Length: 331
Length: 155
Ligand code: SF4
Image 1 (cartoon, rainbow over the protein chains, first blue to last red):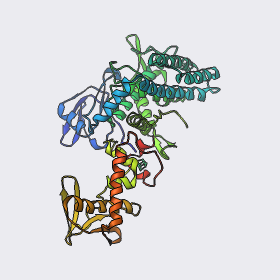
Image 2: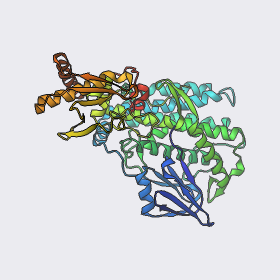
Image 3: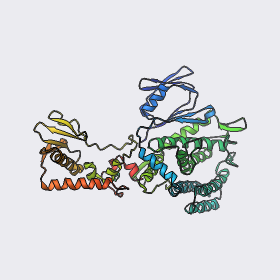
Image 4: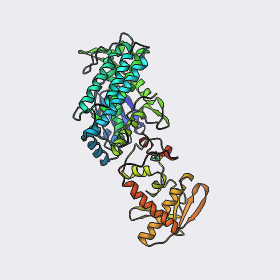
């Protein structure tokens, strides 16, 4: 079982107290957090922290994901690499730099991503609407991935798939949730806000998983380096968004665990309010611990481990040229 | 290296490339010196050429602790390699003791001609494995479930 993530919602101060993290909230409470039991730390409140606190995270190899006002993702402090492997990074750069190798990795990622979108739509076909056309279309797009000849073409296949996929969301999501169009920066309605928030969580989950390998998070294969975020995490997140973010949103909305009242309109945007974020985060963390049978590993693995093994598979591919098995839903 | 060669050549290849894996996994690392506490009194550890660590008993025999019954051959080969190394590189002839701490048993090991052949073919085999561009092919081993590399290896 991987270690759990820890989320801090309070405002206050984060400091080091010998071998533990100490949190002093503005309300005057003090808490101690045993750092050994934390996989990744998430700050959702306004917290001051210093280099000594960061040093402790560093020693225990704990990434710190910082969210700012209204839980907009601000960035990640990555611990210094525990195990340096120059070889891995060299091979990663080589794979990125070789158009054929790069395309092959990109194709695996997008194939899995479309496969996972299709899985969601197929699940709801007949339950929430008639989606057989979309299922067929997604299957065709997935097939066409292998004939793409460069990354731009691959990206446009991915874009088409995502468009078809999002078109079904209005029907899948129980009224009054509608997606209309996928929009972010800022999200324009509740469904967009929910997706953006969850995608952010999937992204940080991937950042943490990549950190456990010697792979360089800034060198992605589908996304261009130089984007503001870690492009390798964006790549891996594309595989897992349908599995971890969208599926959870459907579930939360359709079981009415999340209502329209859990959102608030802000300066021409829409965001989850505090209550909404708590619900979503709690359910997200719970889902990361859910397990499924893994046929290749012959044991049960959690969704969090699944993200980790995907990254291992990529790493192994980069180092050995054995096939990369991007996670395509089999259950 | 010698033990890994006889346990799993694929694992040896991964090791030789310094491939790291998350050390927090529940899988237990199969240590070569798992039983550091047994026979503490009667043995001394020596580091030779900054490369190999030998446990030498008061009798002068070199000792290797056998970790589990599935790993008898790897442990035996490791020990034979030490004896061979001492003889070939340092001109010191010694005998060995393979120790079974859980069973409170010991077995004497001698570097005879056939053992010498085995060691030499092992050394050649190791060089062959680590110089390949790709790891040896994947194949299920009894050790896979406790192997540190499992999540990388099978994915
Ligand atoms: S998982 Fe099995 S095949 Fe792979 S390195 Fe370990 S022992 Fe060898």
